[in-house]
Length: 225
Image 1 (cartoon, one colour):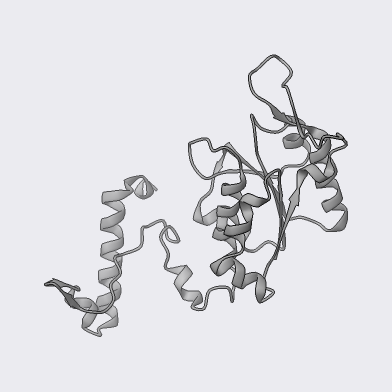
Image 2: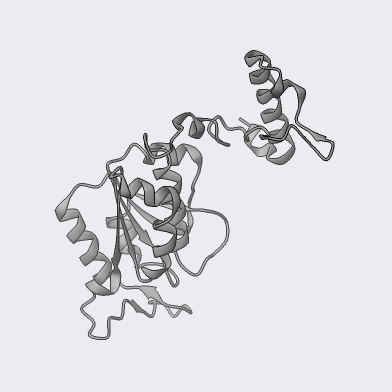
């Protein structure tokens, strides 16, 4: 998989994209992540990429020219399965969306900024708009890193135990059950006996019951369907 991220603040992505699982995935060649500085594509001599909005609103808007230049150049080099715009008014990122994106070969992510991007970019280039929650951030770099992390970890071979990702929260629309490790008794706080029983069927039944109970208590909205 290849992920291209367009941003005006590439330095914000240096750490999250070069640590832990994302770094290992790149080092092993399972994914390529390329960060493109939007300012490299502007025709403005001061490297300016924003301007005032028509209509008199407060704030600034990402200009169409540098975004068009960057996206068009990347599209001329390869086909993209999705061109994503990170925006608070986009579709909320979910595990099923991450699962779908993990099957793609090439993904482009445009990081939103200011009051957004000239809407013609969204009309003519963007195939999917994603948000990571109902709140506003200073820019789309953190959401882009979240999207990349959520997607890359699902690529076969990225995580040592591939079955681990399949038991994560939200994979079956339920929260994950509680997990425990050694010691089995710590200050009198004990691990549930069933997990020490070695009885696989009973353990699976307990995990399912716990997943449903935790979802009902913490995220009842997930059980509506």
